[in-house]
Length: 389
Image 1 (spheres, one colour):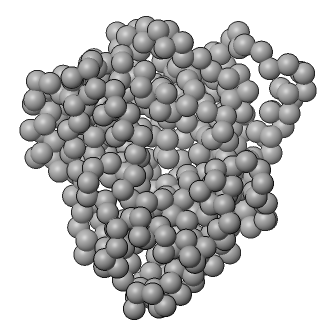
Image 2 (tube, rainbow, N blue to C red):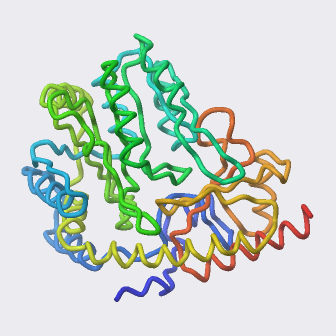
């Protein structure tokens, strides 16, 4: 058994979450990394590599693709060939290469906000035309859904070349159903629009839900899908900057390969070693992590049900990043950030997540010790009672 309650001192370790945005805060719960030790199998693999006394250029990277494909088959039932898996570095660097491979300046790219901010900004800053297929928010139920009618109209636009899906959603925690994924794919397939699915948070779901990859609904012949993912979040090694791109269509894969070569996209062998160890040996770690995060999630859901602080917790389905609706506090994101900071709390500001409709929302990272979750919510209640009520 893994003791996720065991304290891990992250102060003065040059980590952005605790020494950057969270410097001096008692409850830094913004940045998307975990406050848990990496699996022992990964730590041992890293040490073995470092003990070779040199970190050189990788010669053979195929072992990563083999481990990844086997992991995806066992965990999600996906039939992926190792040669369809291409390792890369930081997720957003890889995302930019994907944009270069399949779109050109002036082309349209559909995104579904709220979304991980760099997806929005990298698309915009690289001369692509953004089409914001904003998710529909049912505030009473705290639920998010896809605006399919708008998506269909956008996909028909001849300028649109790509749809970017974040599944499960960061920050809205939606884990799309198979029916939703199929409908999105069918719309794009009918209009020759490539689907890029960011599935980096696919290992954490709640209440018995299961991840549905875009690869599970693709047309076998056309298969105009790209998956971008990483094990960094779930294994606690995001600093190794190791991503995986899965493209089953060989013509699309060749196009990506050219763009990757042009960008000099390479990988750090240490990251491949760590990720491979995770894929091969750490399924038990993920299962125990899910159980622990489920406990945190259940406590949080129950707490918000019992404590009326005029904050709505949008329904958490997946990932360890929860989306909070503070709109009844009548404050913008900067004002919320400043106020919460007075109480030692750091959340990610909603206006970082694309579009102009996220004011009054904040993202909370629950991948921390249960004790921290309890303390943060009590401070949040104190903040409400002293400054808002």
